[in-house]
Image (tube, rainbow, N blue to C red; front, side, top):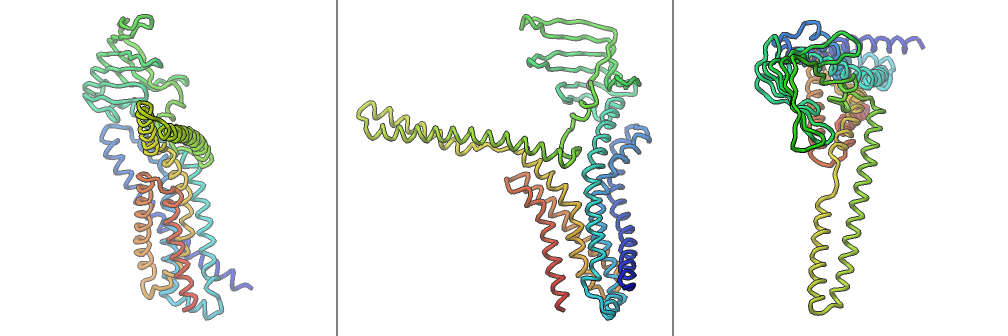
Length: 423
């Protein structure tokens, strides 16, 4: 009765040590990759180091979400590989422990890591993404060279930004073209625009524009314009925190339940479009059959008119069949939704596969397990990328393309486990 808990603690300690090493490895790989991108895009453009560190902090949940499942696979391979190469599995079996008893401790930890990883993905990742976007937009407005290129045209929400030269003092010159709710365009031109963010709570990112000339269409007369000048003006691109977050809103900065609601709304609207399309098809088919009946009973000019109507409705049916409504955005949101489950819960098939593979190690168990872990994680990531690409290009089920990599590894693990059990 005492030996079994001791064995479980021993297996847990070996797995957790390997997990820590593996997690740090994968975490540093993702972290350094992001750091190099930051250095190339941000540090080279004079962004304060404190802001860069904050951006990295907000990116940590994405690194954890990816690192945890991969580390679970590699740690299980390293742990059982070490047990096998040192003949400890043989000793455990000789002491009367079944393979399921040796496997159970790491399986429990794999399930635990899955739920922790899912929690990070569902809670911390959306919060980090929103904070990242908010800070990025603020930096883009205080350091225009981060997003705006000299002598370029850039869309920002409903505005078009036309920039001249960019230096430490601002943009020389700058033109902002806006569109109102009626589709009318107004223009604001400034000799210099200095980005700034004020410190008051109700102030939001924008520009202090100098030597301003504005041109606005007259609401009463279409062909008339109103112009004005000013020494300076404050122009706010964003008017609320929600506007900052709406700039790049999407499933990445939303929780699972929020994504589910969006998918449900999109599915309802898509179903309504399909029903309306089906009604048009039924109406066209009814008209076609009606004109076929008229054609069979008509003579002379009436027959020619009926034949023309038959041809017209047949062409309409073919056109409707070829233009079946599709909602690509619904497909994208479903892919993101199922990916939020597929990656965290990949820990379970990873552990199931790692156990029989780890037992095959004869020497250098940890090193061999680490190498095999790298190969399998690369293969798994390739399957995810391939499945996502397939889901974006076709109408294949998002559930299948996201879950199939997990199911394949789980099936392979179960087959290998059964073979090892009968060996």
